[in-house]
Length: 244
Image 1 (cartoon, helix red, strand yellow):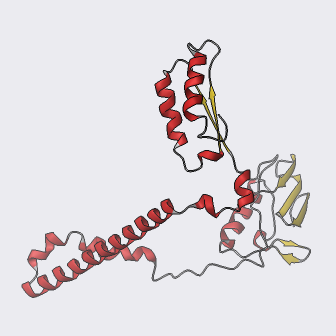
Image 2: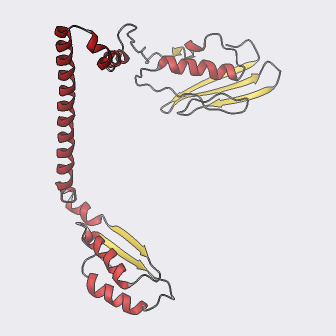
Image 3: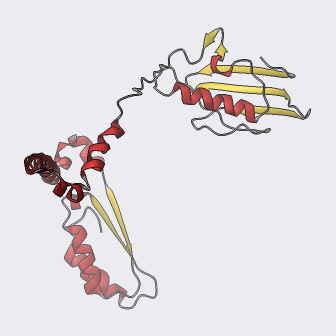
């Protein structure tokens, strides 16, 4: 495969293609390149990562082939045809198809009418009245349709959010699994007044899953009125959580 002293080894498994290249580069320096991964980086003279190929289909073979060719070139590895790399006599890109591209009609052409119509207040006074009225009607229809479409989308998202808020996901869990799910909330404190602590704990106690919450309130040893704070919080929230 190479014009220089090199050994190319391609190994395939369920993770992708592993490539090893051993030999000498143009300057005569020995190198060992091991390539494997899910990113595309340049091959260095020591170690690098090569684009891995999968057995399922993708629409980016040309990009991968170019990156493979560039990676081998950066390592001074001269390959006869890097776009036709084979393993066990099989092309490693055979399951990849070329992405169809339309060279005439593209999505970015949709911006051209808007670019053309955006300065229409500047040139519209110079056209005759009949054409002026028609252009105004068309533009008004386009803007109205856009507003209606945006309004419908907003209502859809709002309705989806309301349904999500009102869905009792906790009740949909399997009863046995529901008992196993527990939440631990840790609240470290120092010299905060007990009223502030109770207000904070109250916001947690109001949760719909408070019965599965283990509430942990941490205090330093030198916290003033420690026993009194513990008594107040225990009396008020002792039955609100799974444990306090």
